[in-house]
Image (cartoon, rainbow, N blue to C red; front, side, top):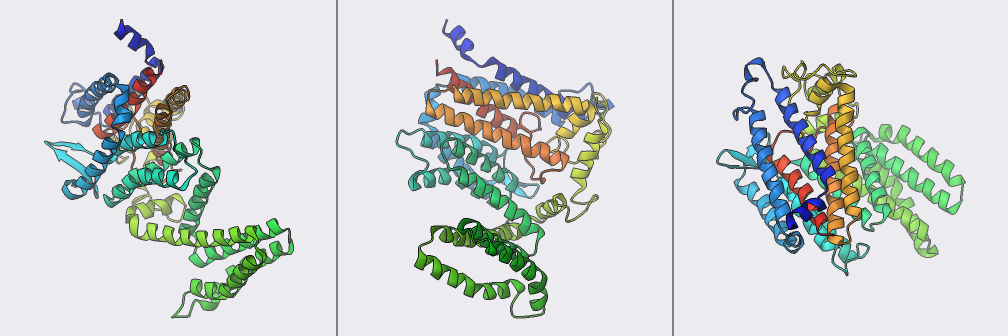
Length: 469
């Protein structure tokens, strides 16, 4: 009787979507490396599709285990699980093996495991545990600092492993913080950083600083309703953009940026003095925004020059249209778009793809697995896969919203955010609207660590959902 009641509590639509996506993933991995000689060896473990079948069988076992564990276990042991995850991220830096330039893998008896993938589970549990405590308030300094510590510590360690792509996935957790009461201004600030990042890559530093100063001056003009300042700001930017780099480009001692700040310094000091004397809050905010923007630009420059690897910088330049390298760093995305475009409306048919079949698309079973779907199933087949993911997101959010327990609700939004970022970035990579950062498509891409991670994330949520009855 208890078993029947438990099965009735399970969200079977989401399990059906899970099984459908896993099946699509398996046949896509098989199709991407299929040839006539391997057809009758579909379970050949020397091939990736054979190994993927093993990962699927073990993932089903893991799913059953997640459903068998008491729902209270996940909240009670969230802290120790997070600590173990951090220790594994440190250990892989010391004892791990290097794969593709990233030292983020353990090799245990020939089986490779990536702690960076599993750390998403630990972070989701730890963040849900922290924010579900009755006296937690996200808008306090202590609450914000605690949440940021939990969210940012794993990606910092992952960056040390040269696995920048997986580290960027942790931006998903800021969506959870926003859902739980974080000010919308934080997301606006995040969007502002993205814009500054793009402009920092595309523009010369001095031009970007001039634009920031002009915008700050125009912002103060709008707040104070001194409309003449807007025209002055526009003239300041255009004049500086035109003349400053040319006037000082031959100075050996100082760069144009240094000259710009030397010319700006008297006006900045006068503005600070005026704001202090007149106690103008708006002017203080403008000046603070100016300083923060300049700081962000320097941080972005450091990140691009010293954290990102050469191939990652090149891919960003190609994405922004600054470079064209169809035979080099841009080869993956170019061939990916060719493969997807060649599928047309209906696709070429199962096992009839040519671009993915003959290795024109690198990493076609992992990062670019969506190319196989686009080529063989066409636009309509791709839309079916995207619709399944959208249905998955809808069910996860529905489950999260119907929870009475704060821990389960917050964890549900962590799961939804992680899935969405992987889905959006991976498909965005294949069609050329996102930089290639090397993250898998949930349940579709080849790999045990990825499949197990997403399975655990999803089925822990399903277990927590059964406890609401």
